Length: 533
Image (cartoon, rainbow, N blue to C red):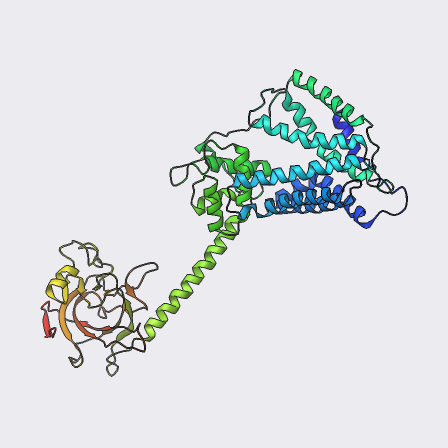
């Protein structure tokens, strides 16, 4: 019976103005009230399917405009009354809008929104009691609609133990829609007036509402409105389906499945003592921040733990498209890092030139080489792991070249298919030129501080200098060719080294330069053409 009455109150439609045209503000206010009714009945749920953020924004915008116009339209209240009501309403609206970006704890911000909005609504309903256009029934419904959710909150946190009240609470919870519809209907009454004092109808109606509620509490309810706590279930992950095509309820269950499960950090995404309803509320807030950093900060304030990928995968069920947006953001950041690294390498390479331009080799190249802590670099067969990792010059493999043996030698160590070379500089760029010949080229000593030749083998047919890896520590800033021009076999490696003067006009210019000459040769002897001076 109560549902039928509520349905009639909503569907009886807007009343036509009974005396002349209504003020423009009142016309728009009635439209907004009926829009809010339609939203609560259907539109907000449909919009939530499209986007939780859009639903949150639309609901907030309609309430903000309705609140502003309704406070202005009230008759029989003072200017101070309107100012206080508007201040409370705007505080709630602004707090709700800024809550995702606020540095205060999420629950504190939520409490501020709730208290300010509750105060504004209470003043609006009290103002309706002084405005002759609104009936005592509408005012009583408004008070009931305002107070019932507060009773529901008490039930949820377990402060009220009368489980039978749950049914009554949920039954009366929809009265807010009835109040909005009746308010819009009665705004069509002729001009604003002041209610007659002391009719006594409102207390009697409130008493009648209490009489209706108490029997429901005695009868009891099948279920109560307490908070729920979904148990962690790792098996639910195997049953998850893609978010696309799922209904709102199934998407929420899927989100809770991931939110209750363990993360890579062996902890749950949200605290175990947090109710499902709170987790879903936090999830809705996490859909709003524009980037991973803001989302991670908000998640930490909620007491959660998860990396950006895990969190985005879970939020995909609450706010579809977040993974795609996250990937697009990551791609943009990676593109910017790539651009900066390419510019840095190009600038370093531009400072290096071929020190032996008059002799053309079969393969050659010049680039900057980025040195790491301690300096040094390697030439090796990158496909020969018979003696361990030939490129690991800091390793302990006795059959591969070792930088510490090179340091003891003073310049170079060669073993098998690798060679380790010492540099004077470290944590800086040096210039490196490589030239690979089919036969031994002329000996070039002029201008070089050290020139040493050793034997090196290539089992796979490759000899390379490593390139600088993304996020790495050392390597060439540009590509260099494979130096094993004759394929697998034995080669001679002639290393030239010299220091460069400091350029006061270019403080970042390299202070060291090396020239590597490689050609086929079976000898494994070490020949020092020019020792360190």
